[in-house]
Image 1 (spheres, rainbow, N blue to C red):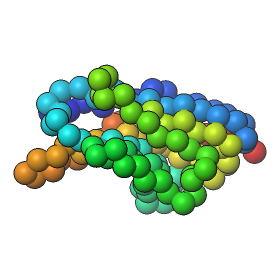
Image 2: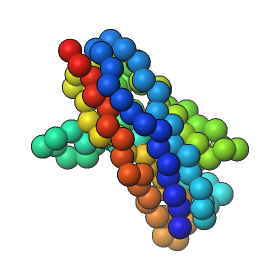
Image 3: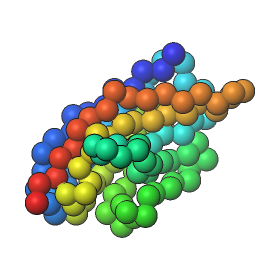
Image 4: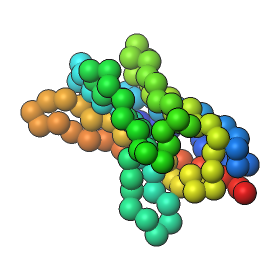
Length: 118
């Protein structure tokens, strides 16, 4: 099993910044992907940013240029630096990890609320 512990989100004004972290522990494969998804009320969960086991990154178009994902492999921790936040970034943010194997397995954090006020 894999456990994901997310940092607390919070309330921030539009234009502000917030940094999320997600620490993974447990039976993690040597190679794994980590990232963040988010879900706003009444909406489906959507990808925000991911970093893959082969060092690639992928961002939602809506956050490109504002959010940066990084990871510390030694600590099995991922970070999401969110700058220039907008009210539409308000959502519950979920940490995600995919272990590489046969089959691949997805794990989710419990989610943390990020609220951006206008």
